[in-house]
Image (tube, rainbow, N blue to C red; front, side):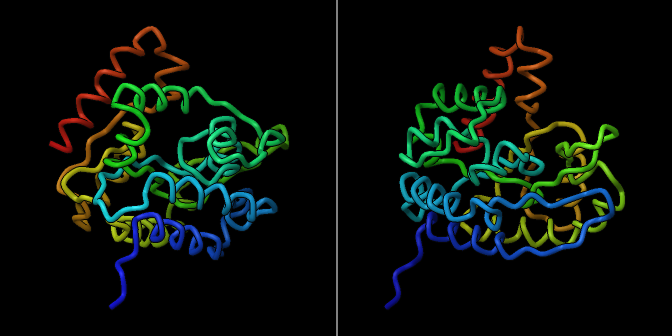
Length: 238
C-alpha cells in the first residue's frame, strides 16, 4: 500500500513542474523562473529544506496568494514572501551574494510572529502566487524591472491558461477551499475574483492590502493592518 504523499512532497513536485514551464511572452517581457535559472540547484535545495521542515504532514491549509514572484525576492529564493537572509539562517545554505531584505517580508514576518510563530503559521497556511513565474519588462532607461501579470492585456491573455492550471495544481496540494486570502486588494484581487466566479475555486476570496503598500505608503497604520491580517486569518480557520 502506497503511503500518501506529504504536503511537502507535493510542493516539491509542484516546484519541479514550474521548472519545466516554457512560454513565449510578448516582446519586451521576460520570464524569471528560480527553478530553472542559473541558481536552480541552490533554489531547489532551499525549497526542499524549508518545506520538509514546515510541511512534512498531510494537513489541509488555507491559501494566501500574491500576484507573481519578484526578480529579487522569490525569484532568488523560490520561497514566496521569504527573504534571503532569513532563509540563509534557517537552511544553512549560503545565499548572501543574492541578499535582499524587503519591507514586504518584514511585514509578513510580523504577521507570522503575532500569529504564534512559524510552526503555527505554516501549519495553517501555504503562500504562493496567481502566476507561478516572475516577469520583468524593459524600462524606458533600458534596465529590467518587475512586472505583474495583469499590467498588460496581451501579457494577461498569454498567461491566462497557465494561471488557471496553476491555481488548480495549488489546490491539489491540499488546500482548504473555504477561503482564499488575496494579497493585493486592487487588480490582483479583481482578476482573481473574476476567475473564481467562472471556476468556483473557493467559496470566498478575502482581499488583503499588499505589504509593500502598507510599509512604503502607510507605515504609520502598520499596526492597524497587522490587526486586520490576524483577525481575518484567524477567522478563516475557525
